[in-house]
Length: 94
Image (cartoon, rainbow, N blue to C red; front, side, top):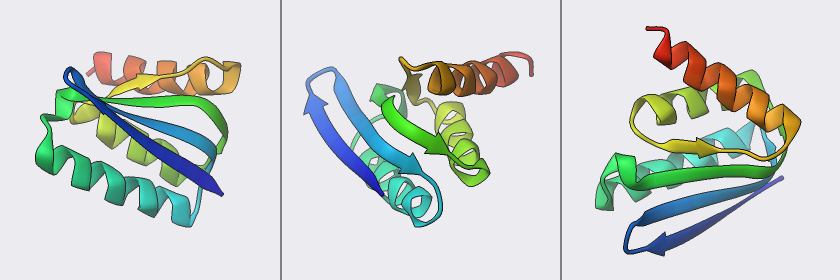
């Protein structure tokens, strides 16, 4: 299960994730992201991964696409920080 909370402020929007980013929840996050960027500039969106407990390969691929399209990925835990570092580092190496 994945809980997605959207918080909007004047300086942008934050998608806070809580749970497992895997299987059908990846599709749900993609849907939320798509709807959000239709009304906001993509670089005004942050994705908080602090409460994520697992990310499968499809979830990592979605986060990579979101980052490449301007989303800022934020993480606090060891696992999620490592995944964000991998995504951001791969993007910087291009």
